[in-house]
Length: 305
Image 1 (tube, rainbow, N blue to C red):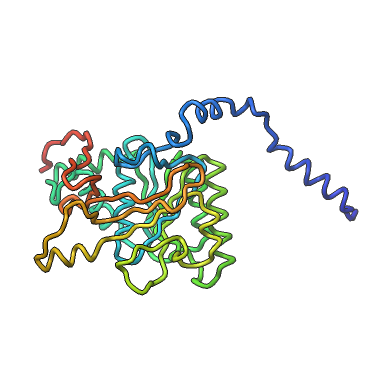
Image 2: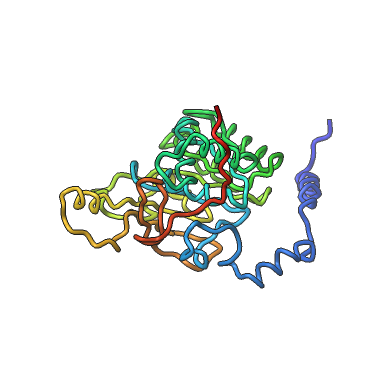
């Protein structure tokens, strides 16, 4: 059997890689769009108008959603996914919460009320058909299966946004930094190949006080994770405000219930904090204390039975 020399091996690998050579003109439409619209206006937007010229979810990117346990990162991301379903197909891999719990939360956010009628619930569920896919697995799933699932969903089902909640349920040890980096790198590769957007939920290290808003250095695991992702969002719930309200103290309504920190946005110029206000009945997050809830144009079907 012939043993390839280094030169021959490199030539063989070079020929393989040549399949990825393209001319700029082949990507001309994308280049024109980027110049005409600007980076800030490229991609899918968040539910809040005040963010539309600041941050977007672009194709081919991966976002890390971090926050202290109990601070609402999954709930906030659920509202964002509901908003994205108006124009995109999403896949939810909620490995920490059952489908009924995930679905009930999403339905309330879409309905904008605490207890929609059975007929309204049915209408909402029908509306989600071809807009949302649920990955029916609970608890730990090996990382390679998650990556494969993302590839299939984006290639075959044309899913644009995938939410993975959370990385700690993807079969990777908390101190296995090399596997964490490899997993994030693989997800980023899938997002780029299929021009989709992957949202990965992750946890923060415990600080001295949960009243302090964490930063990117508080993200658990390998420090390279925050370097590898395109966007880093940190969700912080104002529990001090909640406590003061419970104690009957006067609280300025402009003090946010939740702060969403855009700690990194690789292809956008803006980084900063977004003040959000929580509507308990719908579990929607509003852009101001007295803002209207997000509206979903869904025709209510007749009551069944």
